[in-house]
Length: 157
Image 1 (tube, helix red, strand yellow):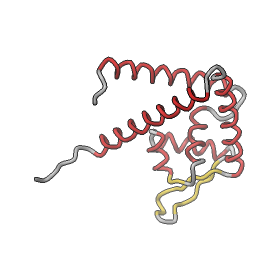
Image 2 (cartoon, rainbow, N blue to C red):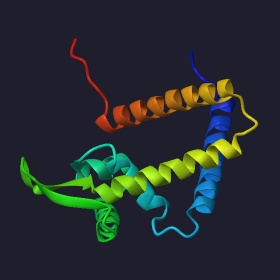
Image 3 (tube, one colour):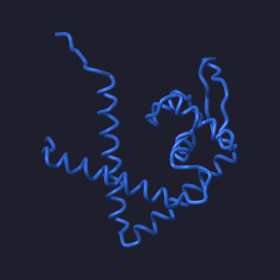
Image 4 (cartoon, rainbow, N blue to C red):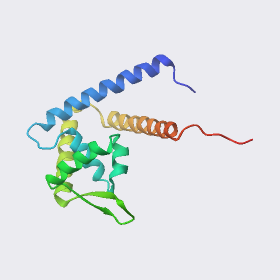
C-alpha cells in the first residue's frame, strides 16, 4: 500500500512543524546552560558508547570539521575524551567522561520533566502510541536513506 501524495505532503509539513516546536522547547530549556542544542545532540550520541568520530559525524548528519569543533568544545568543558583508535591510528574514538555522563543524565532528566509538564493533558496511551508511531517513522526514514545512499541494486538474471 502506498501513501497518497496529499497525505505525504501533510506529513512533511507536520514533521517540519514538530521540528520547529522541538527547537523552541529545547531553546527554552537551555537558558543559562553552557551546552547548546547541537552540543547536547553530540553528547547524547557519544553517550551511547565510545565510537569513531567519523561514525558519529555520519549519524549526526554533519561534516567531520563541524563535529570536530563540537568535540573540541565538549572536550574543553570536560565532557568527552578523544583517543586514537587502536585498530586504525588515523581514526579517533570519542567517549564521555564521568562528568559528561553526569551532564547528559542531568540534561535528559530536565528534558523528560519538561515534556511531562507539556504533555500533562495527554494520557499514557496517547504518549505510548505517539512514541510507537515516531519510532516507526524514524526507522522507515533511516532505512530509506540508507538504501538511497547505497545506490541502485542490480540483479543478474
